[in-house]
Length: 325
Length: 173
Image (cartoon, each protein chain N blue to C red):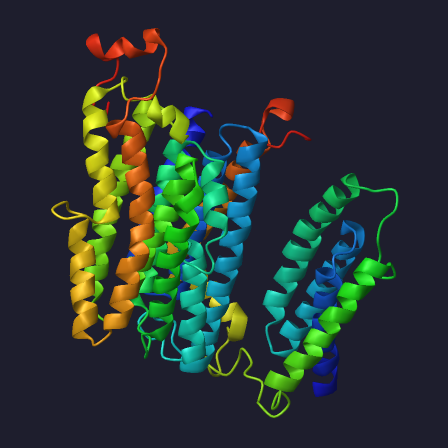
């Protein structure tokens, strides 16, 4: 891709999210989301393979449907309440429709089916942008919707934790695992949204940092499959030692940072007298922990059989720096 | 006049059924043309004459014409109209869906009043949608530029997607 087009698309990605963040009018927020969707489409087809094109098409369909539903909900809100203000969503039909549209945008269960297939067709860098940056703008709008009852958010959250954990159970492709991990973490964020929005932000920011690190470590060792992950221990030994910490942090084990949002969310849920929901969320996160542990096991805790030439690199100087270039 | 509006709205719903029942692009484009034309009639009926004119010119006369030409490029030897069985099944299904929706949601549709474009601004020279257009150029200047940026971005996106002939993302073109 020519540098001019590439920079135009990246700048448009920035403009879209900034526009949604800065807006109080539903049109402008929707426009920012559309700019984001449009700008990432060519970035997704960059590898020019049929797989990438198919992933892009699926992404576009899912996002276009969700955007159209969002626009319809915003217009119905203007019809019922007379206001285009984002904070003035009082009508139950309207905020339910908006929540569902935004849930499809970020990939919450039961509207999550597009996520794993789309992530599988992308390069790791584009998958990273999709998992982190593209979630910011819809999340900003979800944060601002004020529903009267927490039921829908809790249902979406719990279903996403279940779907994200159970779905990633049998995956060997790392991008699909990362997609399911994204679904599960977004489920945790949305679960607590009606009770304590700051906790949602804590969960979101920790998730951003953790998933960015994991994507980047996979990018540096250029692994997309558990097979290649298992033989990548010799490439960058420091990374081999540190990646289990990232993975266990994603799984939510103390004393790592990933435990903090889960702990506080469980505490808030029990304070709201929702102990069963808390227990279910914690138990279904064990599924996610299982596949994070499997990844740590294959990468660090074992040294799978390798040809003699492959075992040599750890003695020599590594070809990659572990700091981002 | 309200009878005309009812006929136009019926045309909208039937056009939706015609497009959604998945015929060949030839016929689907015709369905889109009918829907757009009828929608322009609805706009005129509620007072937005200028908006209707712009919709006709730009959407019908610009975008749909281009779409019809590109649908002609995807010509097939046995196009499926609305008489072929798969399409007819879908037409029947959607008509049933429309009837169900009318039964569930459409109780008072003829009793609500039509809020037109003119009720807000009062008695001025620039009324309704024309006043809106002038506002778009004056107070809404930044939003207009944002809209223009989005259109330019879409152009770049489409050009980038279709670049490369046999080596690009869309290998058929």
